[in-house]
Image: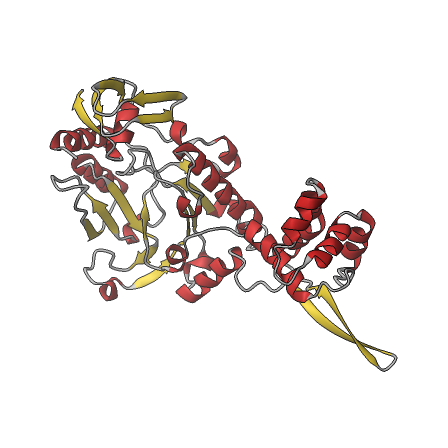
Length: 392
């Protein structure tokens, strides 16, 4: 990245930070702060300035206005001495519970906009299918934030989670990811001097019970019934230890609403001859994979994590780290709602062919061709190191 482009980005960030829309965290004075600044060597060389503390919202915003950092972070933890230069010297007092959902798991080939949409669905799932119903988190204690990059952060700020250690936080991640879930139990029953083995779903008080049963009794039959018999049997035959005969039995079961309803009412999984626990276990694993949430485990389990400040700018995109109303998550569009810059024309020269949809407009430019594009697109593409800025 050329010096001119770096200066352009810093100048645009400085303009924003003269009147920023910062969402200050609670107990701000007890947080450690960290910054990555624009330098002649950024972004080729990245160094973080940390172990800082601010005694008021005003002093923090004055710092942002004067320094215009590329990235701004604060600690999920509260400390007695947040500006101590060693972690032992800070004296940990507690920490928010943080979830980081990003695009690392998303299939390649999707556009940036499509990728962000997929991660947004994961955030919605985590909040409305796990955090609120299963963990009993009050919606008022949840803060949903677009990261400014490729994902979303969810902050939980209440007294109960504040003192959780790394082990307990890791258990939360295990739960939402479906790790260790064993929904099927083998039973034994004695009848006329003979021992009969049978399988049933375990009865639990969490939502995994209903999620797995819904997949087995509703979604999977719908999938099987929506395709040809040949394709369905071919798909079922891919299960371990399932040959053509067992695949045919499974196919008949999933095409018989009355048998499915009987199994659903009794939770009796012995209704298909030759289909043992390991086969049902494979099907429940598919249900878990479909319903699990892909959150970054190290972020949640870390009780001293630095996280992006809501309302700050992301130096890798120029987008705002944007707080979102949980009730309006469906309406949120990062490439429209997290854009803070204007549409003034900027002369640029792309390092590659460019096509991006932003602010309800498709911006295109050919490699090495001098082109004018809107300021908001220039900031995004310059931050991603896809263009050089020639003039503004």
